[in-house]
Image (cartoon, rainbow, N blue to C red; front, side, top):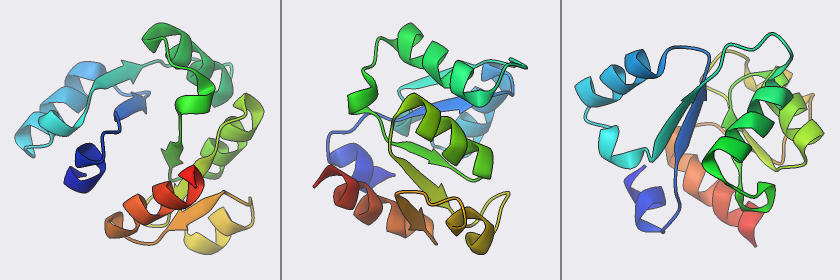
Length: 122
């Protein structure tokens, strides 16, 4: 995360958990300085709708976003919105399941994230 932050990129969190809970987790784990915003939404209309709301709320162009997620529905939502996606293989779904949904990149470890981001940006 430090390398990503030092590269000049902003980072935010999209969650269905409360922003307070996520903020406390970040604070407890000394990660607050890496995250620019936390956007919480518990919509039942699909993650793509929530992702569009986040972009509007934070005034971010989809061309300036790379989504990082650990579920196949993260990949599907990113495709619907038209943004690249990095699937992380240490979360909810395993690498094989994520790969079957064709993300732009797959990160097997947190250390792989910066390299995946750089591949998408070039």
